[in-house]
Image 1 (tube, rainbow, N blue to C red):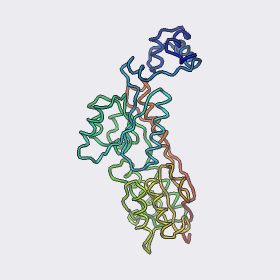
Image 2 (image 1 turned 135 degrees about the vertical axis):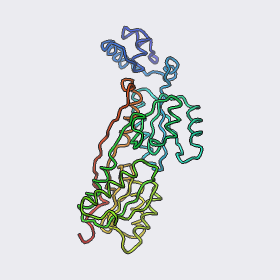
Image 3 (image 1 turned 45 degrees about the vertical axis):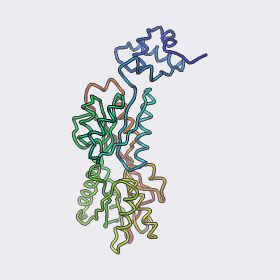
Image 4 (image 1 turned 30 degrees about the vertical axis):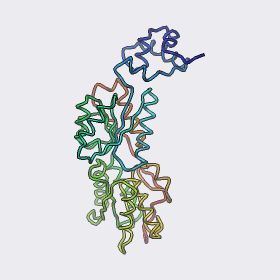
Length: 337
């Protein structure tokens, strides 16, 4: 038997082709009993809709775009994995676009990219989530978009959020409980929305615990492994090195581990290191990283579902996603504690 067609589904379900098309496209105004018969027929016939035919038969392209500007390969892979899973589940395709948010011609770059692509909606990840040039270009095109972890412009779109401030508070409490009192933080880029909440959460927590936030050494990073390596070498080469370093993402924390190894320091005996995100690299380094699990893949899949689900097109939604403290081998008791 050849591949099942939409006519086969309609015949088996006792419904019109138009009604079957409405169910396939996730449209409302189909009786629950009819929808159930059609879904049962689709399952029984192992029917797979043709995306091109669906696009021609409706105003939809069945394509979702995911735009990113992030140097962390682990973050990008998690974003892609989560968004793609939700798209495949709904019969959509995912298009990934790398956008240089620092480009002087960003507005023109966005216009050209959007003009050459036919999409039903766009997922924006930080720092694009808070870039007004990017938001203006997408709105001018008339596209719906959902933002992952935005900080600014809360009423401009639906979003999937997480508590970066609270995550950093937990890291600070963990390190303090291990007896650490000399801290350093490798910060994220100022353009990235999570950078300030993570830094502020850590410093505020140290102050609340009885420490001096102004005594915490701050070194800039850009969320890349290289910036973590450079910052780690700077922090660990001196005689008054910190006993604990919080890197504002896992890639930079992995760079600190490499710096410690290069300087023949043992982690966590000589220095404790913590990251944030629980990206893939956190378990690929040695010792594995203590970090905060913020499920980027889950957040990206929720972004895709917000775009795909017609029942959630009527208003702005905010979907909060929780975090979890993951303690691994990169943190331990402070020397002499």
